Image 1 (cartoon, rainbow, N blue to C red):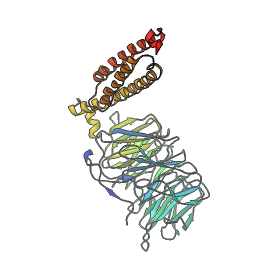
Image 2 (cartoon, rainbow, N blue to C red):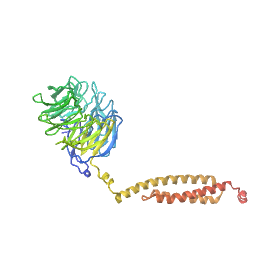
Image 3 (cartoon, rainbow, N blue to C red):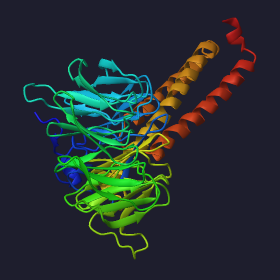
Image 4 (tube, helix red, strand yellow):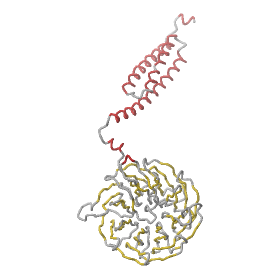
Length: 492
């Protein structure tokens, strides 16, 4: 079974196409950073969800649920449609990695060095695995031909790459590099390709973890390696973007602009590589030659890994702007450099976006999750002239508020009624009749509460006479209490 792609039909009323989910870091096993479907022409902010600390990784999106980790040591499951919390799980350590969702299980590592398997239904832990250092990169998976369950593969700052049995977390194999592993390993056919902080791209067998080759690229690798067609693409801290020919075990080409590193992971189209740099630029390169096709400038660094969706590129910047630019051509003469759309969030965007079901979901360094997409019909209608249905709906809301007010006043009058009956009814028989009449005043309030078309005019029509009657009754009671008893009352 291919767990990587789970075909989902999005909400039909939103008018978008069928779209794949985003179940793991960079969307696919080969980490190409490409999303299916189509983005709306003008995405709207649909909802926000606040966590307690920074968000450094992208979410996973599967079956209408957004799975997001945060530095507040929680993994959150959020409804993609509404932004409401479904469940949250408390783990040990910050969650910088993007969760990997396979079937009914979620796999993610923490800065505490523990790797977790959680139930997607409620976040309950199924098993854990301890490594020797923090885990900042996401997990991937491999499906052996002779097994019905996948293996889970991830790297740790203890320099090891781990392969675990997805059922119980037992170790299948390990592979040691010479330094930290910060990114997510790519899985391509029967190979695992990972970049290390030892400045090498490592290629190993997915079946047993044995080394195939290790290619030196000139600088520590913080991001993830994107793989397609037998070539691996990655940027590094040696201020270069490189393409590695896996079969020949050599560097095919190198791109270097200025002395600024690349912490972003690349996205691959059929003929282009797109990657963000700390030179405040988004670079689009030719996949065959490494020559730059265009560059989109930003006010701050771009560590947020871009995502390609159709002919568009989505990425965030450290100045808090979420952008969409054209993949095909960015005009250097245009002041906005071909930018199609941008939204100023105002909070640093270091985490990559996730794109699924025609929506963009991204977390900020301030800990807020933002979701963008096509404006639902209900929100579009709010911007137009209210219809009769809208007016009726708002009238019902007003009626509910009015009814609650009326009910409170009715309770107050009832309390006064019983107090008056207890203290005064023995002094004057006619007060029994007056209090009985006041009791009848509660009936209109009950009617108002049950009236779905109640308005303030109806409420006031009941309140004013009742309050006036109450004032007269209290005055009469006060006079009755202070007057001397009549001879007849005295005889009684």
